[in-house]
Amino acid sequence: MASKQTALAALIILWLPLLTVDAAAINGNEWKQLPRSSRDAYIWGVTDTWKNLADAVTLRKEGSPSPSVALFTNLVRCLQQGMTYGQISAIVEKYMEDNPSKWHHDMASLAWTAVFNACSPTGR
Picture (tube, rainbow, N blue to C red):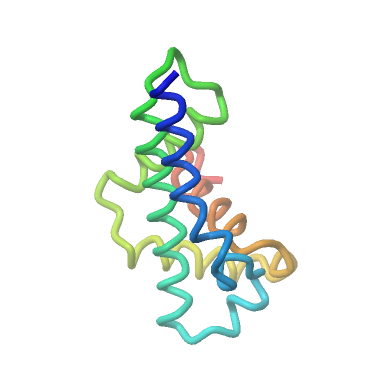
C-alpha cells in the first residue's frame, strides 16, 4: 500500500509543474511563434517529463505493464539510446514543417507523435 501511495505522490509531484505553467498548455500554432531557443526548451522539458514519468512507472514494478505503459516506456527507451536534445528538436521541427494542418493540436501531443514516428521500427 505504501509503495502505491509513494508512486502516486511521485506522479503528482512530476505533473504538478505542468499544470501550473502556462507554457505547458500551448498548441502548435503558439509554439511556432516562440523564438527557436524557447521552442527547443519546451521540447526538452516535455521529453524530460516523459523520462521522469517512465522512471516513476519503472520504480513501481508491479507485474506486467499495460500496453499503453509499455508503449510509453519503449518510446523513452528509444530517446535514451543516445538521442540528443538537438536530434529530438530537429525531429519535432521537421514533423511540424511537414504537418501544418495539425498545428492547432496540443504541442505536447504533436511532439509525442513526431518522436513516436521517428522511434517506430517502421519509420512511419
